[in-house]
Image (cartoon, rainbow, N blue to C red; front, side):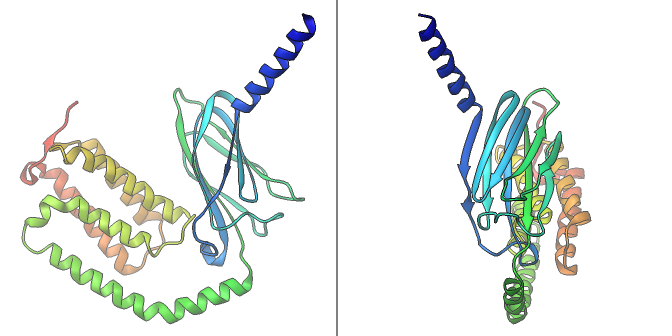
Length: 273
């Protein structure tokens, strides 16, 4: 009987341990498209307590240290992280608590990131890891960028002309935030993935989703609008932008301020729920 109890206790311990860990293979999104010809991964997790994220190659292990079991929302890489990844870098993108790189991928080991969420309830955390690509990749991408620069200029000019037509008359007032979304998504297409620049743009899209969801029901939440404007201001202050892109986003921000001050004229009423 005593031996049976020991076996059952061991099995329960193994089950508990496995329940505290989540494993995932990376989604490979676009090989060789990291910043400056480098490579990288982005990770999005929900933590309520403390957790560790361990990355080796294209494998991720999410380990619960305390609190509720963490949840993995996203794990995308340009390619599997190489052993002893050259030029390895870790960057926090979003999250209310602390994120810390506790082990770099040296001697064939994994990269380990610890996340501590001290507040009540679960918090969402996003971070990026990056490493250098080889010089051949950088030269090849540089040559392609030079060859395609004129086509890019022409496409941008066409986009600006279409945008100017959109704002003729007053009909644009009913579709202002869809226009802002298109401007942000247009910029996303020319921004390197797995960078703070890309993450700030994604955050703006997220806030627009929240705002547009209520506006589609005829309800205006000024706090949601403030969140969108804050995210877009963060893009303007911190992203690497061309003069033309900066002009477009500045105009979007100005029009949103006008919407906030005169929302009744736009057919939106306050949501006080």
